[in-house]
Length: 151
Image (cartoon, rainbow, N blue to C red; front, side, top):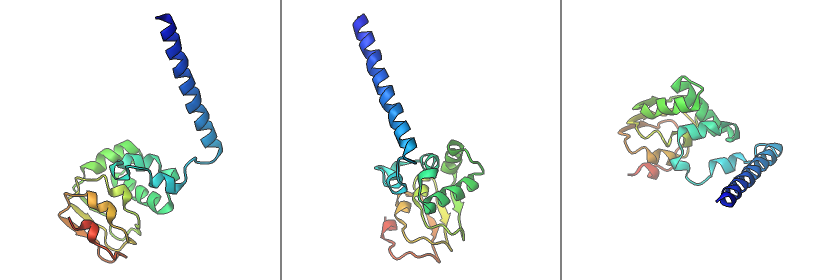
């Protein structure tokens, strides 16, 4: 029995050392992940706003800007608090904000009304997950394909 406990502790210590070493290597090599890698990780559609917010430093400028706009809407800089507040929103008004990236909005599934007119949006695929939307304003953007909202 004692041998098993010692073996488990040794295995846990090895895992801890590997994780710590990996973190050091990533830290020394910059951010470890490119903005593209962070944004194309599997399961982006299942990511919460808090996930996007916590990775803000590694996002491309367009996505980072959208996260910052949403933090202002939530009136907090705390990622978890913002996620809680934003997930309760039924309506969101983001008119004339120079937004071009919508991925951080994809988890706000309680939205029933969103206004995004006068922005720089061309890809509306992230809005497909907002199945409770009954009113949306996307006028004066750069959208050429509305099929993502077909359903």
